[in-house]
Length: 84
Image 1 (cartoon, helix red, strand yellow):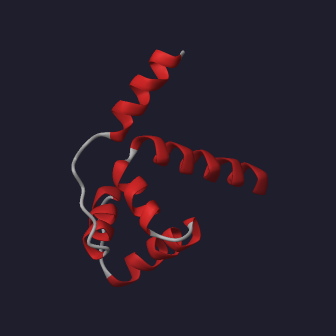
Image 2 (cartoon, rainbow, N blue to C red):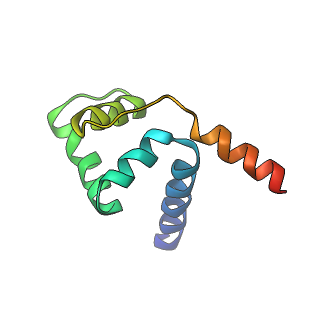
């Protein structure tokens, strides 16, 4: 059971890294993945959040990071298609 959760967590990180530019930007700013997820766990204690987009937007604002709106997923997916 624990192994299953570890594999699912790894896949979750990999998918986020590939398709969500804001996650990618925030992860570059924070020193470790643990810091990122500690912040995610703490956020609902202090503020009501209704979606993943809201969480990432709030973190981007708090860290004073810019989001250009460029879709990271499109560039990676097109790269994967051309490589395969």
